[in-house]
Image 1 (cartoon, one colour):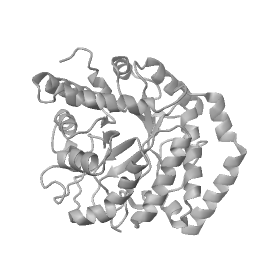
Image 2: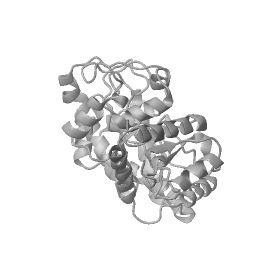
Image 3: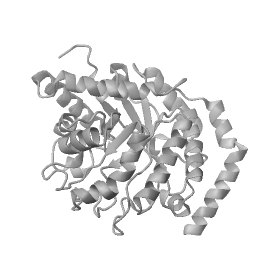
Image 4: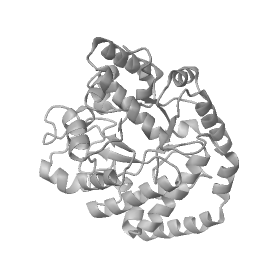
Length: 359
């Protein structure tokens, strides 16, 4: 194996606590590709700035510091950060300019806090009323409406200097089960996938969304054997070749039961990379993160994962990070200004009104 190949760059990890733990600090020094933050990591704006500042300072490469700040029930940052409503409320109002302004305002807070990457927007088309794992996280049941608002959110995040993520490819909206607990199945035909679920992702790729997150689903019409997150047919065949995506493909968390109940996390990480994925997401346990990194290293040494394959992914992740301009660390003064901006009050009033209207 080429000594200079930083395999840690293929991983994005989460951790407990409000300070950088030693194992994450070591990973950052070795070239870790990303870190994802959750509510468990955040106490207040000042502490968050100290945490992200330490993460960036410890990193050997430009770092993707991510968070799921979607809105509604998926908000990782507590008040006084902007309490965005669920996507369904925005979709029901159907004012893409409001969606864009909201994404820009959220993005400015994130960037000032030292966060560079939002795992949003959700581009799933919510077509199954029994689907609670997506539910109001989606902009609606019409692919064109989801597209309008998804592209507006991408524009807003980009304007604020935040990397956006289209998720959950190929589309989680027609499932009933929750991939945190089991492997959901989507039985629709290949034609239906292309006519409905792929529509928002295709358009997001056309406007150069930098990252796409792949869901843990089983769809026999796309791949009769493997979950979409481990499927070469889905990632390399459809996402890359058919839809033309050249950015970073990130896995959903490999600790979710949809995958973890079926295989070792190290094997899952290797399979994801074999399928054409780039950034392995492991959100919780340090031991599993180390097992996965070791498994990828062993697969490269043995030749199962060709060096050229992983070098492509490392290069994509580097190009993605290079899209971020200016200092990557936090700016507490800018954050105070973003939270205290007068225009924020009028935006909050608009958001409160649409939430009332759709409740």
